[in-house]
Amino acid sequence: MTRRPTAKRGPGRKASGSKTGMSTSSTSRRLRANRLSWSETAGEIVVLDLSTSTYLAIKGSGTVLWRALVEGSTSVRLTELLVETYGIDTARARSDIGEFLATLEARGWLEAAV
Image (tube, rainbow, N blue to C red):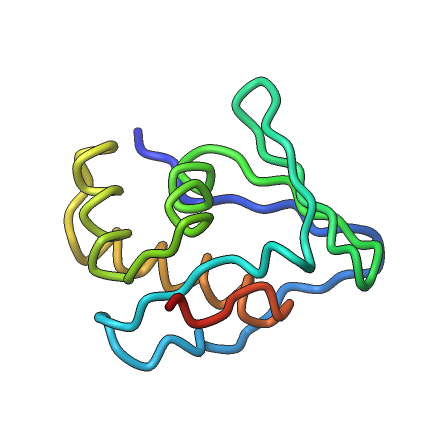
């Protein structure tokens, strides 16, 4: 059984139905380090948005994606990571990544990597 990237929303937060702002699969994005504080404990990443004081807990394959986005990554590379790590098919990986990135994008947590 594979795990989809999961995220727990902080109090008062709703899931976003918006699509990710990543316009192409070759666009490299990274996390906005100056806006976020996070730590990893027992296989979970807990993120605090410093500008809104909201948090997000990330588990499972979301932690793989998060680590890649710290330095910057493309959706192509993120897809490869999920396929390699969890043995899922490419279409499933793309779908999972789209949902995960949409959540981060809706919160304003991604920026172009240079």
